[in-house]
Length: 198
Image (cartoon, rainbow, N blue to C red; front, side, top):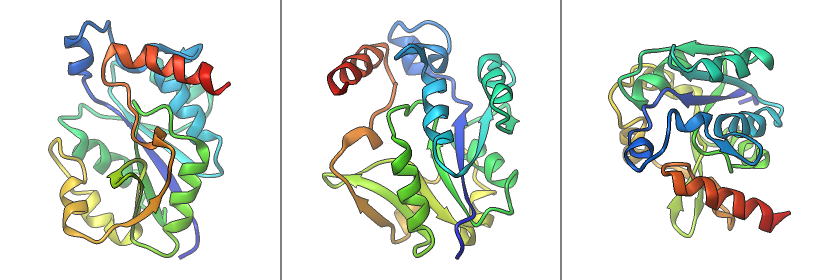
């Protein structure tokens, strides 16, 4: 399979845990390292040589503005769950040979990780990074999964597909492929880790 693979960034969640823990507004708009959470996620994805497509909600104006500014195509969806967001993104790009499914609240995944997963998709049908036996993101699917991905519903995403099939894992040491922004405290932790690494 030639590498015509793209990144689907799902940005259509409700961030219920973030708000319940005291966070204000959409967590993807929250400030992290002098930009928003979503802006950092998008920047890392765009730093690869891969196509990028974003799935978000109509009310997420900031996300739409960032996509327009960088000429990144996006799909608007009143998503009832991650499954529908994945289905919308994959259905919008049926010509790709594979899709890297990535969550918008995971801004720490470096560009090189996307490239590694995309390269591995030329040899394997399902690919994801793993750290200390714990799976990370993004998750790569070859084109043979189009029908199932484009039919997903509910809030489990592609979890059931990954449970039922053999996944090729890329063993890595860096935990950035597992870190997300789920609580307001994660924003401060992200800032601290960034300063420590600089």
